[in-house]
Amino acid sequence: MNEVPKENELKKIKIDVEFNLLKIQDELLNYKIIEKELSNEEIEEIINNPKEILNFLKFFKLLRKDLEAKKKKILSLRDNWDGEGSVSYNEETLNRSIAFIENISKNYWKKFKLIIPIPDMFPGIDGDIDIDWKIENFELLITIPNNSEEPAGFYGDDYKENKIKGTINQKILDAVIIPWMKIFQ
Figure 1 (spheres, rainbow, N blue to C red):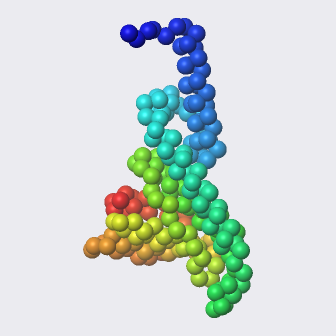
Figure 2 (spheres, rainbow, N blue to C red):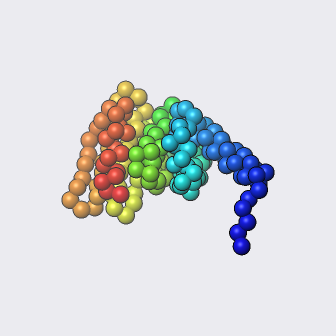
Figure 3 (cartoon, rainbow, N blue to C red):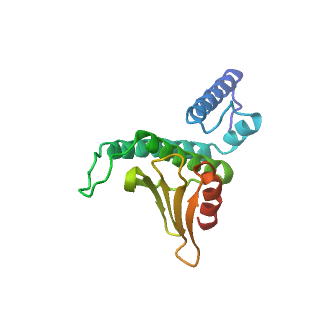
C-alpha cells in the first residue's frame, strides 16, 4: 500500500528539487547557454524532461574539454611545424573557432533540442583553423581565418546531390550553418 508522504518529507523533496534546479541554472549560466535566470516556463520544461537538459550539459562539458585539449595541441605547434613553412597558430583565432563551435552547439540545441556531434578541429594553412563535422549524412568543413576581418570558408556535402561551397562573413556564419546542418542531420 502506498503511503502519503508526511509534510516534512514533502518539504525535503521540495528543497531537493529547488537545489537541483539552482544547480542546473548555475551551470546553464556558467556555460552561457542562458543569459538570465530560468523563467517559470523553462523551469517547468526541466521538471518535465530533466534528462534532456542534463544530457546537453554533459555533452557541453565534454565539448569544452575536447576543444581545450585540441587548442592546447594546436598552440604547441611552432613555425614550420610541418616542414613546409607553416606558421604557428594564434590563440585569438583558436578562441574564435571554439566560440563558433560552442555557439553552434548551444543554438542548435536551443532551437531543435538536438545535440550535434563534436567536430574535429585542426590546423589549417596560414594560421587558419579548420572545423570539420563528418557524419553519416553529411560533411561540413568550416575554415576560420587567422584574420578576423576575412570571411570564413565553408564546404558542405550531403553525399548525394547537394554540395555547398563559398565564403561568408564570420558574424553571420551561425545563422547560415545551423539550418543547413538541420536539413541533413
